[in-house]
Length: 193
Image 1: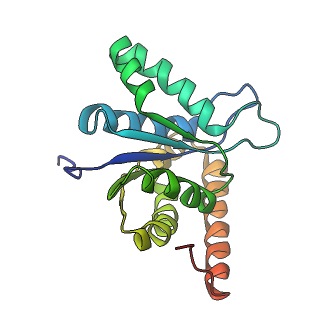
Image 2 (image 1 turned 135 degrees about the horizontal axis):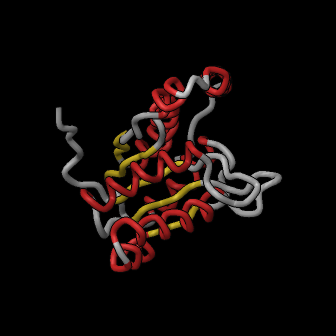
């Protein structure tokens, strides 16, 4: 079955993930990046590409910077220097966010400032529902539609390699993050207008 993608997006947002101590994107971030770059190159060339993620303690660079450097190198190796140059023109780094809620808040300003009406959101399938929920709550009041474009294969990757502990930790972390979101909602949290 062929996957269908929205015919028009003003840009893509790729959510950050762990950076290793050497400043390289981890496995989850690379999975998201490869998917997002493939979408950008084959379906939305010349559209902006926001990479979101701040600097966590113990890492030398922000997630967004590490993702940008990796993306430029990967693009040059796989599609050539012209593709790399085009990507470099389209990249926008959001380097303040340390979680998904902050990414929704900070990328909203960047997307709205470009007059966006529809954006694609790239994350892994395990994280996508919560990310889509938070982004929709921020973007919809500003008239911006968020289209989920989940990167496939994360759960399968860990399952096939018998990394059950990592998979369990990731699922528990995601469950805990949902509890935080629901507690904010119970206290009457509303996104800024």
